[in-house]
Length: 264
Length: 286
Image (cartoon, rainbow over all chains, first blue to last red; front, side, top):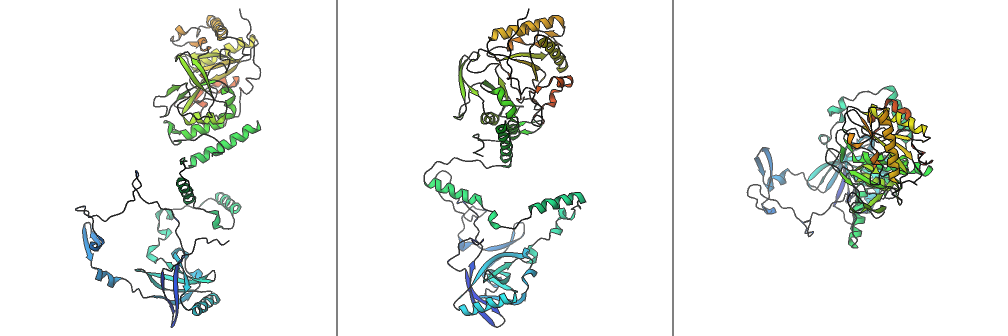
């Protein structure tokens, strides 16, 4: 079974074309990363009446409809520069329906710390040109680098083959990532003694394994799901307290005591 | 967790000993670790507890009845309580789960009677409760203990000693449960009188309790309604001391603070391990 187990989307989120020089390949973009974080609906406790957010004026507490909402930048405390919709429109990047690739680099040259979100590129209309582009990428073992505007934001992107398809990964800008060496605490790290290092290396050696994403599971989501099913069947819920660190410690002690008593 | 214990732990991070910042989790862990050595002394005895739900700096309370909401699996024994003049469901702690359930209730101190159910009027333990009055202290209590042991040895009685976790000492003789509490009480009283007549710092009567510098051998503690602090029970003291069964050799340099929640689990000796192996008869004394 593949390590990638999220269900695919039935609808693409964008369609346009990849342009490499004079070649254009029509493509659709599918979501690849599916955040499964659980989020609760907010309701009134007593009767589970759902709540909604509203934009409220901070001066007179009146609810403001979307048609009256504008955008501004706070330049000093309490001082705003307001933009008109037209002004904003002119500032937004050109949302041309195009992923523009202007050079190719070895994939490992792209520091993975810049990787943001990945999308699946699928052929749109013409399967032929997509297959050709995919094959060429695989042969050259290179990643295409370019720019791409999704919704209202322009991203640096890389396009590269993965699992016999092309995928697009948006990147972070350089000014969005902090250099660890600029963190004060990191600057002051002291060198360990030889003995300490030896011990640490030994520990790491004994724990060296292959990485397997299946080692990890979001149990909170599963527990919530189980509880939901129970509640839907009308079962009463016995609230279990989380197994805090201290409970785990106690259980370890208890295990030892019980096995000691069995031996007696 | 369920498979290890039936106890549902709550508020484990609550501080029960504020001076040393000892949490309930630490108290529970102490009782887990000490259970193998402790349980035989609790077995089939009607337990009385002193509970400190808000820590030892706040008032604790004495509890005899099984508290409201006790789980079904907690064993109880119903008996008329002379002191409260009513039928009382005493908790019987014969297993680890009950001990940990009590610990979770912040029952720091566990007190046991000197007899077992169901024959609660026939003591299987005889107690010399040595209680020093300031400025007498642990040293005077120890001195009394040695004098007492010599006498008991002479009568052919094997005796056992523990500290109370406070300033006192307890000397115990395991008995065949064929005597009444009046008989054990009189025995202790007679011995007390003998020692008091020979040694000026020993007294045998409760009315002498408040005489400074004396050690009282408190014979009325040998009664059906009385209890003593259980071996290995924690005490509600600043240092989280433990009432600890001792080797006689340990008495020569005894500091009660050295027996506490931190070092008892690591202690390797178990001087009372065979206490119940040879119950004894009371000899005649003149």
